View 1 (cartoon, rainbow, N blue to C red):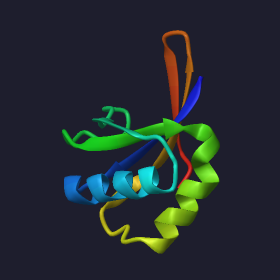
View 2 (cartoon, rainbow, N blue to C red):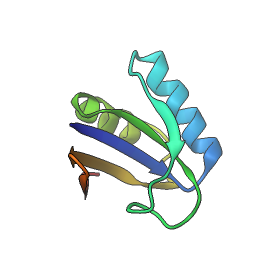
View 3 (tube, one colour):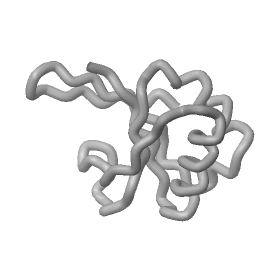
View 4 (cartoon, helix red, strand yellow):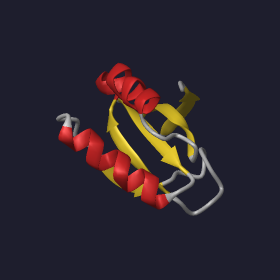
Length: 86
């Protein structure tokens, strides 16, 4: 199973970006940021890996000042690998 986590430092920027994703037809869920990505207790968006190129394109068009990054998460059973992809 492979999915994306989009992490921001600002909750407001995250919520605005999730709205943008939904407007273009990309399903995203707001989740707690996993500790493997950030030690702060922030929020992130989770979405399907197949949207990676569209998400990067949208991020280039929007204010990404508070973006921590886009992370690909691969889960095999109980093991989880996190890789920053943008």
